[in-house]
Length: 207
Image (cartoon, rainbow, N blue to C red; front, top):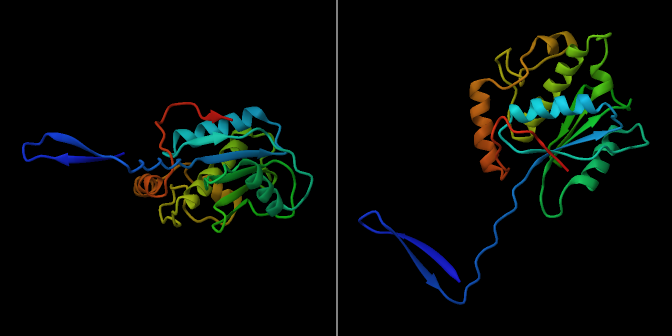
């Protein structure tokens, strides 16, 4: 049965129904899935996910930790996609890679598959015992990949997490979240790209 909404001249809304036509199924909304790979620091994962969800208007879910026995970061990402992306739903996937790999890049994003990797060992260089500095670097990199997933470009604002940087020292000086213009574009992209929205302040979903 097809249901049509008709707005009358008086402002009232009426319903009409047409028999014989099936209602269209609602499209399942996308999520951003964080996948810990070879990462056993659960306190770190909870902190990173909590920060990301508090500053991202798209719904974030966290997968079970995943093991991967290869140095190839691209293959680790492919394995995470295969295991964690729902059938028929193109969720954005971010791998939190906790083991050494074949790249020194702090992270990377592949727009062809809408997935990225945060290279945690590369971000730990030079932190010594400064855990706060270590965690903030990872938070920034996760937020940057979220921005890339949702189509943001590099930002000229040095306090925005989407600002271009070259060194870890420059990364340490950046803000950890989005400037107001980038946040506005992010909110528009969440709806346009079919992601589930999220109310800031709730805990992220574990699955």
